Length: 112
Length: 112
Image 1 (tube, each protein chain N blue to C red):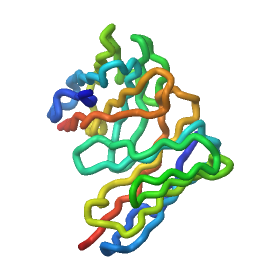
Image 2: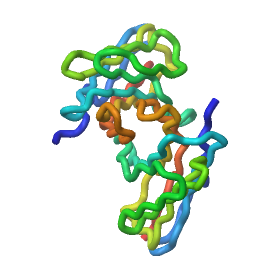
Image 3: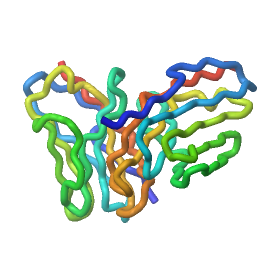
């Protein structure tokens, strides 16, 4: 069974702090995606990484894909209350087919 | 383009009944995947349909089934509902050969 381990499970920080969320597996991904989900809504796609060692930036969010394509991280700089939500990583092991394996998520709370 | 839509948004059913959920993908997307999200198990892949054919299937019992129509709209059916089927059911669509999946807002199913 392919598993995605996401850590930490919960994170509560003050506005302005930095944080990193990790996503690890023993398997190699074809691609990895990060999503943010708010209560009662569907996940919203933030980024897709495909190439080992790839780094992508989205404003204050930096996404990194491990060289071996088995792990990824999400770093948020100067977190804001609007960053609050559930962050999910999802791996695709079967090429471009639509069966994503999701981590359990990191619930982030940013307090003003 | 309009996003993925799901109907209904909320549903309450009794144990033993059956239910049908509907998903309309983003225009031009031919792949539709279904996921179940629960607090304990997180997001789990149910199945994927592409051009009216089931392309992938997750590890769920045969009570869970789906289909896709020629306009790419998809339905998911759960028969003989159990209390444990209470969950947020999400559908996601994507173009045929890309990695990115875009989620709808979900249908919150409560089984009493």
